[in-house]
Image 1 (cartoon, rainbow, N blue to C red):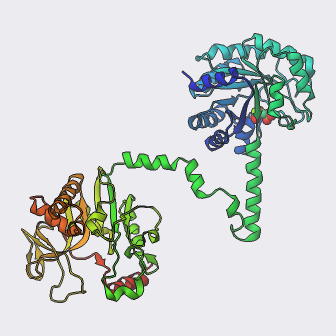
Image 2 (image 1 turned 120 degrees about the vertical axis):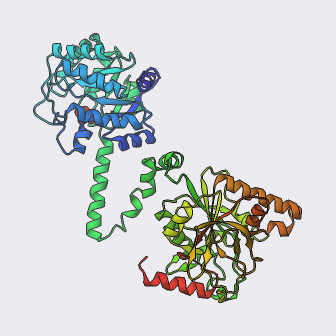
Image 3 (image 1 turned 45 degrees about the vertical axis):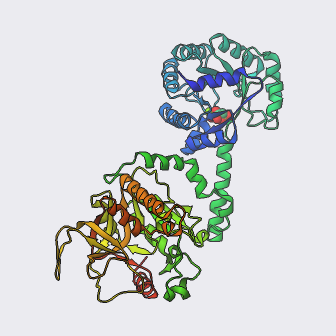
Length: 553
Ligand code: SPV
Ligand code: MG
């Protein structure tokens, strides 16, 4: 049964005063808890103010309950609900207690005014209920609760309504006799004297709760020394929010921008944190299964590109991933397309000028040995225990969405995107290309006929152009098994060269893929004709930049 009610009982049993603060929604309850209060006061004043209506039973019981329940859902400290007069007679109180208890509320306070009540600080109509009627409500409430720890607090408004101390003491004694667990003695006096006198006369007959909104100088320690059990700070969150919001809004309109308010308002990251975004994202990783399953991207971006002389002018000190293409880093362009295809888990392996690799939303890991290792080692610097598919993307490749979508639809444990349209007679750059020979290539004439997937027979820079069927684009997708086969093949290469030997360490992704094939593993190709480009030379760079500068984005 109600853990929260047990927690509140434990707080009451403990020495010293229990301090709770008001909220009107779940966010407020979180702020109360984070600040370190012992509990949350679900305040009728705050809840009705949040709906911009008077605190006068204008809202219904279900509306107050909704608000209190939303607080109990997010708070791990107990919620004490302001139950006004119980929203009617003893029958309404019975219904209310059942509902509040089921909603995980630890206690309700019910006041001895007539329904509909008006907030205690409003002058004029403060009508006390007959004692007998209120005693009936207390008895009904105590009979209705199921969890013995649930607390019913009798709130006495005799001082508020001007009936004086004797009436207050008489009523409170009767309410305790009727079964109430504690007394909330309310006062609107600016001085604490009437509360202090009440406390002296009360002599700890039952726990006392106070709401020092008007007599605010009294410290919690002083209340404790006078025998108060719980202090309610009933409206201070609401009032600070109103003051802060009014100031911010006025300033935005007078200054003409939000520049001057930015520093004193909560950053968006704080809002996200309060909303539980971190949990949401980790849940999404575990449970948001798409038809394609879980997919992450890994971008090995550790190497430099100082081997290409034509790039030295524009990109000597920049990792390829951060090369500006039409106003955005190449990596940001890659991320845009990945996001469009629904891939948001992106790990970038940094090395050369690694600290420069900064694009929002990436996980950056390092290949600290980037100078002695090849891109196969960089690729495997990303965690290899991922249980979905891994899309590997070289850091110097730009591609479009359809290209990725098609690649991800192709079956196989390791599938490479291979361009079959390369014109061997007109080499594009000085770079040695990773060429691919297939074992069942499509029939090629002016057009090619055949399946869009085929098995790799040979891959690497040593495949002669005249027998090659295509060029490896630098994009490949691995299942978990495919990634394991890749790791094993890399280990085999290193073992052959002697572990730690430079030749083994420098193995390229294509070298390892060739090893997978040599070991009898299947490497599939998905053949593409367009939708990608590599940026290796200044010429490639100019072409890509012109594409992005003539189009939006
Ligand atoms: C509330 O917070 O709604 C209360 C306390 O009931 S008071 O506003 O002081 O009446
Ligand atoms: Mg109230």
